[in-house]
Picture 1 (cartoon, rainbow, N blue to C red):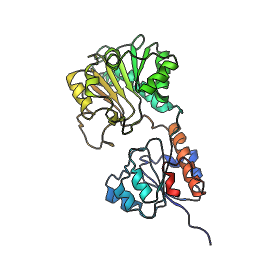
Picture 2 (cartoon, rainbow, N blue to C red):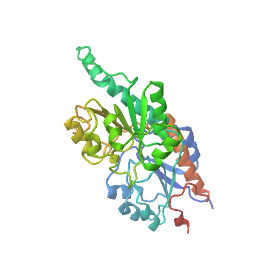
Picture 3 (cartoon, rainbow, N blue to C red):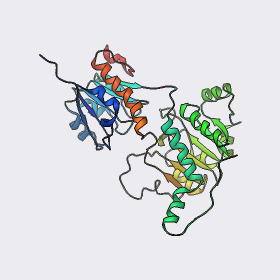
Picture 4 (cartoon, one colour):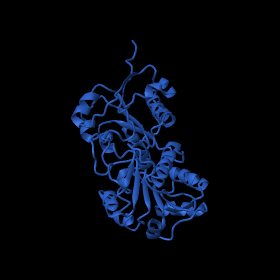
Length: 328
């Protein structure tokens, strides 16, 4: 008698992109359901996922809480990539759900790095406002700033930050670093320039870009006091996670004019499905809807790992396990 096909749910593939990836073929033989909408309500989500053996998450788009896991007795695997602040790992362990997530340490993310640079250029040259002025028939609306010779402060000495630094070097910028004590030590060992102090890092940088993983110990690591010492012509960029900045601090800082501008790709609540959000529509802000990783090329890289994890688990040899004690 043939064994029933593994029932797999994929959440939050908003543009039904994954079916077109080469890596999707790795799921052949499985009973796959792709959900293209977003279901934030825990009760409705649990009802949707009843009967599935495995679940694939699309980054942090959906939170998996204890309430959800406790309602899914058939669920045995959650497969995703990178950090997992949106998953209650303890609850998964308690209910026998294995979480697999490749942490891909040291692997550059060109998509996120490129998007960071796109936001920097857009902000420094006022590209959105210049475009709107042109379309209104008013031609130019102001004067931008060149990048050459300016100081870029990178907070977090990791794979994305280092790739952004390579772009900065090509533009003739001065790069300085700050972050954890360990990160600063690695930067110094690599011959990089570390600011003399945290205060000097924020005070003297023309642009500060944040590149840190969101974990309990990094939540709110950028404070209102940090932003308050930045210059009135300075720019803060965040393509990492909104939770890295102290709640409410960014809007308050922009209201006060220090720093003078922000360019962000991440928000405290996502997706934003309402008009006139006070931060997204702030006059000193350039914003995009968390598209730093949203390229076909990056999806193929990420979901190759995620689908490999599903196949490995199905075949009895799971990889990249976060809570391997489930197998005991």
